[in-house]
Length: 184
Image 1 (cartoon, rainbow, N blue to C red):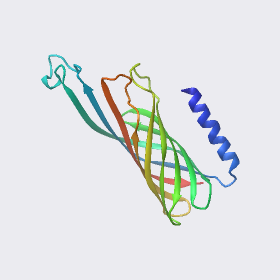
Image 2: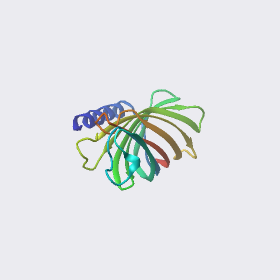
Image 3: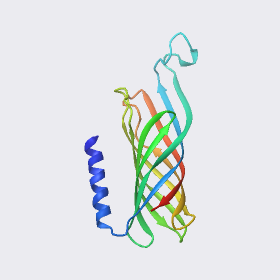
């Protein structure tokens, strides 16, 4: 894992070093995590809740809210296309995560843009062996420039891999980020 973060950091530094016109920003806002867990034929609770009986498939859906804050860069490829890597600390129901989206931004006009790309999510806290600390997602969203320095951004990210390593549990955590940013 450390190797992947190091490679991402080096690539980010190289990209920023190549681009003399990169703009940096700080952003913060609300994050909602929507989790879906499907258990295939395993006993979750024995002698307590009969809905979790042997051999049943059970699906649980839950959403939690929290906040995020971090830094981002806008590295221009052309007048209308930018690379926008971000490093966001996220706290969701007292769980600390790093969200690392590397989106491409397409400016539709002077104020409105759409964004899309991959996102890595890294769990900062200690987990059990069956849980993946690094998860991969894909996201899309929109950005609106209120002024030259201030912008709002909203994006939704779908997790592609399973959160648990076992085949009996199918679990995904999707994110909705809505925030305000300031370019400096």
